[in-house]
Image (cartoon, rainbow, N blue to C red; front, side):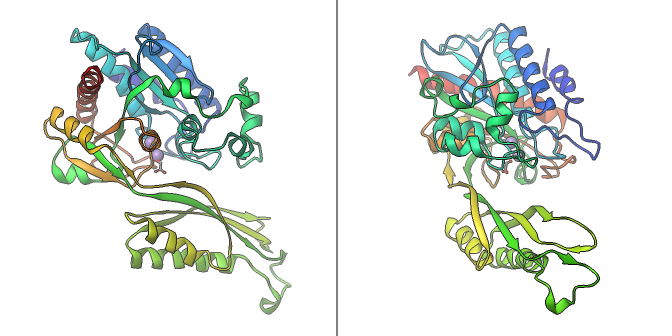
Length: 392
Ligand code: GLV
Ligand code: MN
Ligand code: MN
């Protein structure tokens, strides 16, 4: 099945009645997507391997004989997300293998397709969970204890999915299969559109993190409690949101509060507790950390994830850019499994596909079919280039 067939097979999986897709890790939709991955691997005679952390690998050639080139991304989404963030990279990786085969190219190294688990951190809060566990930057004990919004731990959810939570953790055997990694991704910005190019190559990822802020007060009656007597946590919360915006504008970074939990959540009660999640990103790590310190002053703050700046290997980026017709090399403020692998020392690159509006993490996320097809060609060329690089 070609790119278009694979793409349309996914359109009905995990649709959200509120719009877009909600494909959280280990949900019914995610299990359906994993089954789709298995079938696509089987259709091509690829060897499907799971790893200790729930990531999937489909190999053309045997990575136990020598490390190979892996292309891939993720199939999970944010809540009410777009179709492209993640799946475009996985579908394109299968299609790139088809294209290499059609061209009669047999790379001298194994070629794999990867699907990483819980890339968005939409369910358990830590993005790139699968690649962080794989590379050992996240402690398995911490991962097992992460909870979703229902209060279920990752360990419980894994057990229900028939998996062994004790297996989580750094996986040198799987890591040893990766000679080079390339993630194709829809661009989450408008740089390529502005440059008039369908394809780009990643230069870097901004440092970024997520912090949980807890504002505690005292629940009370919305009618009978006098304003002066209230301990209303909604007020410092609202001030923090505005302070984050003002500080971000001043510092030239971006700050977002995209998730809030108000308890008990009654329209006629002063809340007793507000939990809010602050996402901050910027070119300059110091500015990001200063903003969190400023907004979090006097508040209970817990860092849920931190990703330092990623600089993709400039020699690899330059090589791919040249192989892809002088594709522009651009930075991004979005996190990716490729960034985690690059920081762990794997030779890594990213290929971006133009997004005409730049919108992402939204049902409005889009890429033109012609650009997606150009992405498959670019990814096949990138895999070949990286495979040739591993042979020298
Ligand atoms: C992942 O898409 C992120 O940048 O949050
Ligand atoms: Mn993504
Ligand atoms: Mn995303």
